[in-house]
Amino acid sequence: MYIQLGMRNLIISANVLVKLRDKHHVSVREIEQCFENKCGTYLEDTREDHQTDPPTLWFVAPTNGDRMLKVVFMFIDGNVHIKSAFDADRESIDIYNTHGK
Image 1 (cartoon, rainbow, N blue to C red):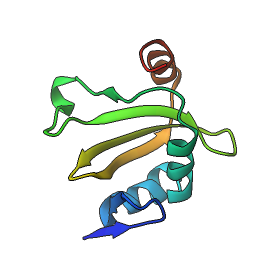
Image 2 (image 1 turned 120 degrees about the horizontal axis):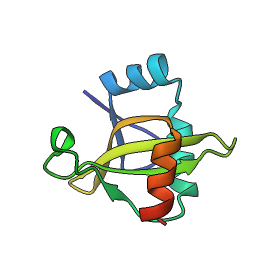
Image 3 (image 1 turned 60 degrees about the vertical axis):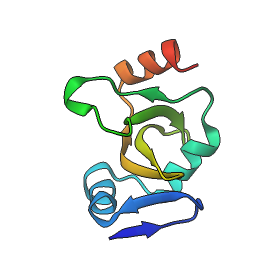
Image 4 (image 1 turned 180 degrees about the vertical axis):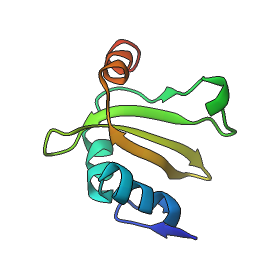
């Protein structure tokens, strides 16, 4: 089951919604804000155990409350399927600042 939310083409499965809420304490609105506030491009996750078809993409951006999140997703049939979103660690921020901006 998928839930279509505020962003017209943002899709988050029920299982991922639970993980976002219970494990990462990230709201759907915060994810939307990260897409709105993104400054740069999407990076592809090329780690062997994370490769998918279509590719898994990610970026780091702030919410409107300046919370830096790493947002992980896939483009499927013109929709953005969220895989995860969580507080960005220093390594992810540095990689994104070097290769994504």
